[in-house]
Length: 360
Image (tube, rainbow, N blue to C red; front, side, top):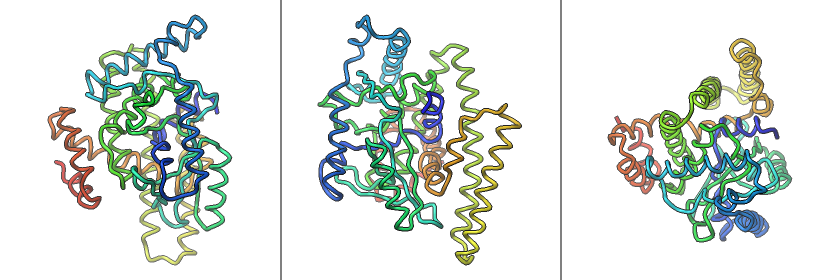
């Protein structure tokens, strides 16, 4: 995967927050799955070194040294300006030697945008299952397809352990995102730290949309206060395409959800689904040609686009406007905002969603 494609993977949906260490502690599922989770995470932590050691090492490439130094300024800003946790997370770095931290498997029924969930101790039920080995993720996706699910696999550049691995050194910076453009690197760090602030153990969309809201608010503040004009310009171009991508996929999700919930016969739903997916791809090609100057960074996503891919978009984006309104209601005060989000996270899911939607 090229560096550009990794950047776009982040732009399309975020980090996945795979929570593999917590998932590997026990409970339902196979022993093999838990073993790979524990091995993968512990190997990552064992190889991580504190950022000051990388900066002091004369063999550290200059480009990496510059990015690590930038990451620490961003990390300090997360504490001082966004009131995110002040701990050891993102104070160390490791090169994994691969283009993704983990690969997530996602699945939906053929005629639904409802993500299949997997349930684990401590973290509850989530709409993905993460693997450190791509082949293992592909094998599960194939098994799900054989069972009639529509499945997909996507790489994520980072994940969160919700602060539970702090005693082992915290979640490290990774080669999978350290070279992102400045605005994207800041958003990544803010998103992952937000998962340590509040977490609902039965609501992937709540958790990811909250972290996405924090990354957007924090990212704009970082760019406005600290980034160069060139960095702001680069971010604006990237984010404009990302917004158009979200609008395009949101329209398709809305149409498909209406179709899937209708009383149309299944054969009719399948036919109209195929037509809508074909139109989605055609609309993308037109947008790329007419407004993006041929920019092809989203080609891979559209080649693989299916129900699960669209559903993941919903998990990361659909509740963000509600969180942004809540932030405004709390006077743009991060401490008050986080306290209210934690209060909502402790509610039963139905009550939580109703309370969040009611924010003026």
